[in-house]
Amino acid sequence: MTFRLAFWLVALVMVVAAYLVVRSQNLVRAVLWLALVLLGTAALYALLDAPFLAGVQVLTYVGGVVTLMIFGVMVTGRQEGAVAEIDSADRIRGLLVAVGFFALVGGAILKTDFSNVIAPRPPTTAELARSLLDDYLLAFEVTSLLLLAAVVGAVVLARRRDPTPETEGSPR
Amino acid sequence: MRLTEVLLLATLLFSIGLYGVLTRRHAVALLLSIELMANAANVVFVAFATLRGGPGEALVLFALVVTVSEVAVGLALVMLLYRRHGDTVLDLAREARH
Image (tube, rainbow over the protein chains, first blue to last red):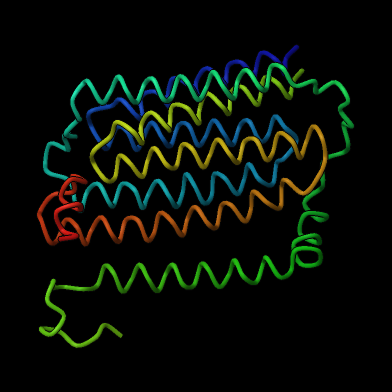
């Protein structure tokens, strides 16, 4: 009973915060609402017996991504941080697509019978770490390569001072 | 039963993110909406890992790295756009292509 109450509370907070992320006219506030959604996700992970992922969620998303986003808003935003919204016709079309998607997938979920649940014991952190360096070693290494490429790419993109490449040596 | 509820919550979050992607015009706001969608996908992974078993939790860790990389490159592109045009409205990106 306590679980269900906590779940519905977290779900309510997440949905309201997510709505404010996409509707807030102030970008800094939108980022902070996103932080609330991500914190709610961490709470949800904790409720789902995944405490390690909850910690990682707080560390990387709330600590890293939200900080990056706030930096992005601060560096690029105009002073008032206003967002130019598109016209209402497109808003209605976007709403139609989103509602249609939710109806489609939600209907499929409601129709699916999940009663044959295995209900296994969720992996402990030690088992998770072992599986990362054992079963998924190749994926683990490829992911590290991806991260390296992304960091180098981000630095190269953000460093370029001028649109014309000949005014500056190749960024190295 | 619990699984259905969590999946519905994730679907709702994904739909809200989809709405944001379709209606936002500011590049950073668009990135925020994409974050919402990626986050909803992670919720589904964890829900299945806990309630049905399988490698969901390891997948979430990989998905996390991919998302963080995407944010880093995306924000670098936003800064490039801003430096060239002094604004980050996405219509400018369409002009910049020509």
